Image 1 (cartoon, one colour):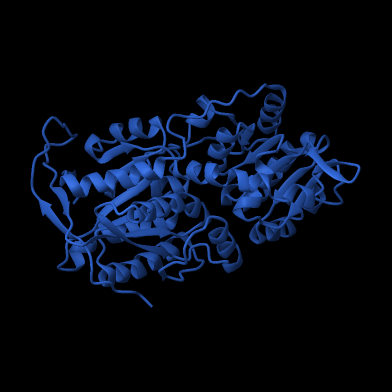
Image 2 (tube, rainbow, N blue to C red):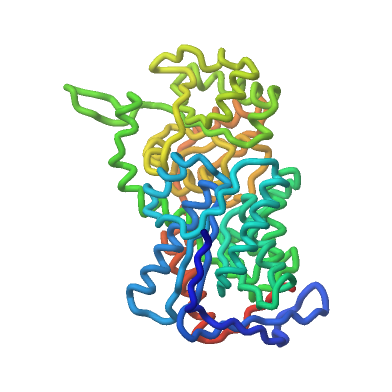
Length: 436
């Protein structure tokens, strides 16, 4: 059931030109000024597990702002679209990240990209009508991000109400591969957003090239790294390595971690096509003869392994070699196994960032990355999806001496900067250009 709360801030749209700012067209952007009477009402949207790590620090920073008695007061509601609908894993991530229970759960579930996006759009529009928030925060690049952004952008066209301000966290990232659904989601969301919070300098460059006004863009750092730094110590205390036999033992006592690699694969382009999946596994074959490769595998990917007859790549692993399939892990256990890995192999964007921060060598099993800072200043190498390219990237990473260089503003304070920007916007009544 959707909730209603009467106390909320007043949002006023004011037409005004923005001096000293040039755009790609002559159109004058209207501006949005937020004025508060009682509380600024914010909806933060999550839909898939990567969203949880990005949203949790923002929610924590909003609570800390209120607890300190600062003004304006923020009234926050968490909306879970249900895009990742497996309750056990979602509940585990919520607990690990100390996230509150969602105030609204849309219960969307699975479906094609079109079906899922349309259902989220329909249900979130209803939530907007009932809640009438002043600000909507979307994070990342999943279908929930795009659908909720679109609902906000079109809200005033379907009602007599002014639409909320739309903030996109993790804006400006580009792989320049429009065959990636996430790339489409990123681009469209950025061009609808009023506030674009950027994680790395490439995001600023990309948005400038696309004609996004600089006054909308703020480089704040990476909220996913906020979560990583907050829970790293807890992850170090995890028993996951002992449970998997990945710690040396001496006189019955646990010692240093053994050599092992960590593998994650989830992109349909990698696991839903037999040829692609087999090429990746062949590329890992030299590594699997040297050290064990731990693969927390989603049930859907496990089914693909059976359908494609790829069990030979995972059969009877010895303790010191082979690919070991294990069940999906919660956030704390996953960080615990990632931070001590000799090598991480992944097609996940977030894991490229986390390994960069942790100083763990990473091979990205894709032809591109939307996070170039992880290659330029981090520990990441693009291995591609061909067997030869993967082998070459693995050999390079195993031979190199990694010198961690944490990117600028990946310091655990990105969420604080986001809340500070929202606070400044309200208190100073600063104009923010609004895309119509």
